[in-house]
Image (tube, rainbow, N blue to C red; front, side, top):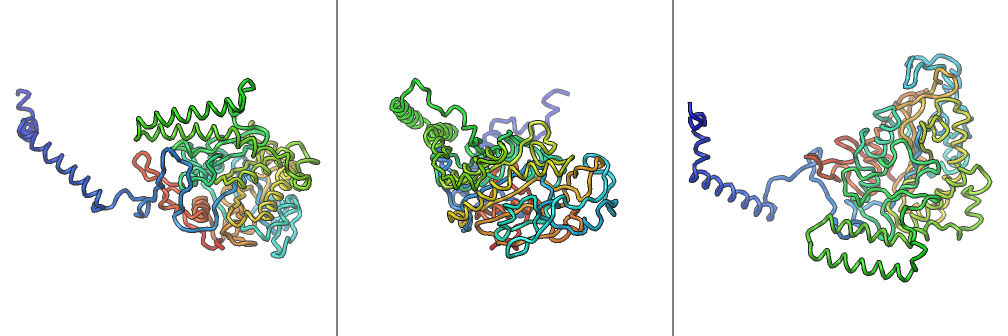
Length: 500
């Protein structure tokens, strides 16, 4: 059989010149028709996010990617301060009071696993610090955090949070990006992608790392993932300014200014030759922001003008060296928010060598000593930051988020001195714009082992944060690899009970 005979009649027709021209002509006409229908809005529904809702994508000018953009609907929160505590804070030793633990102290836990994340489980352990009623609401808080305890009437607690993992890197990823895997945009990147910032002389999203270094997942906690690079967090702290911003000593300020002006003119002229090149426009915008940061960042980092009373309230002096450095980071966070930075993510804890309660809250051993050490660093400066924001009236439009990746078990590990990871129940809290004051949502069981009433997923938590910023978590999407991606994947419900 010849080669031509092996081709089907339909195939031979496509090879015919007249047939090819006929098919190509019809195809071209169909494409033109589809284009005209799209322009007139007469096509069928475009790409939809989960639940069949049309995506809402921000209209971003590539030459001004940080420009402020309107939210999907009006909400009081305009800025966010995220205080993130890597390592997993023990909820049963801080904010989740469980008197049953004292009654069963030293006994084998009934109906609980014999083996957990790091090995055999030990006996039930009562809280390592006494709980007392605090504020007008009488909220029970332990003596581990006396300074934060003074402000519980302003906090909105989530006591029945659950997560999908009991490993730190995945837990950090899940809480901060909505996925346990790497490569997804962080919460801060999603918000700045949607809303931009009010201050175009500073980054729209700043991550302030702990004085000891980065958390386990590093830059993934504040990365842009598949969103444009303009929306990744810029990381610096009170003791580590951004790299490569310092003007060389051999260059005068006047000469530096003239150089910047010349570059701006050259960039503008070059951009005129390629008006549709969004990547080029974005690169130029990022370089121009870096130029502006040469003057704005040193100013915002200079805390020499802060009063002695402010430094004393934050605990800059008089405690451990780490507390002093973290306190300076807290002051920097307030100053960035004052300048209009949209998202400030403040880390308390790092993970240069596995944590183990020394560099973060991961207290698998000697929890009484290690949690106390972390609390000495975190408690007073964080409480002072909150009080400072409140006193300045900034909580009217600033949402404060205090979060960790999961909780810790109500029983000890086999070593008898530490608590293992608990993904089934943990506590975080919100405060400020848009949330109820002195309110607790959800409950863990009588031991603090599992979420029992109104279990709340990380998807729900993140959906609520976006809602408080005026963003619909089901419609804020980015089309990537054939999928309408979102922070909450295909899950999550706004917890409306916590809304003020």
